[in-house]
Picture 1: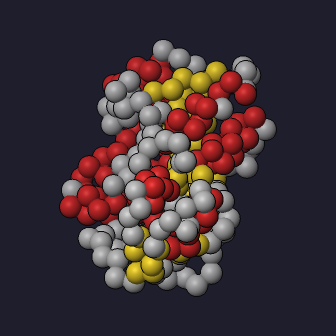
Picture 2: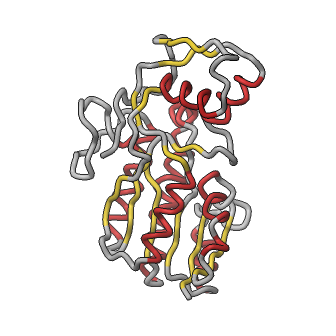
Picture 3: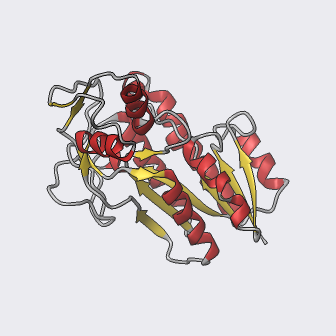
Length: 258
């Protein structure tokens, strides 16, 4: 039996891992949402680790509001960097293997090909910078860790995300004007959840930085079209390309992970 702490359990990835729990009776999961465990609290993290004997910690907790991170970066750095440092130090103390979810936004988007784990990060917004700092803290603190970078994460069931937003608007018959100026790899949380569990089940010791996506490069327009086709809604909605998508935060044009 392996004992696994999952932080950020109310998020779309955390819930996707919970859905798989019954398939793996040899794994004992302890799911904690932000109310159960505030990872920014050194005392709370220390207490829960001291009361349990975790083999793994899957950190799904993150500050993911890219726009707001530009306006209030301290909040992003607190959760994505300082709290991650706290988790890493505690994992080191209790000999727990950390699996941490990171992002394609650690890259600047200027590369024409897919980004590899060997490419040098260069984030262009505060969210990406905070996530990269969290990665650095883990690498400085632990030898046994998995930093799993993923991109354009969505769930068809849980949370608020691009997939569910497009579906909701399409069912209402709203016109869709979707940018085609960015390219990435949409990634279903259920696939990422299975990948994370496979690392544990297989006792992987190939530690370090990993890239995981669904491995299909799309623009947001392409992704919207795929969502409509999958749900037989392409005939009901006017979907148009837009190239004037404006955001407060700069975003990488190409964030395809390879």
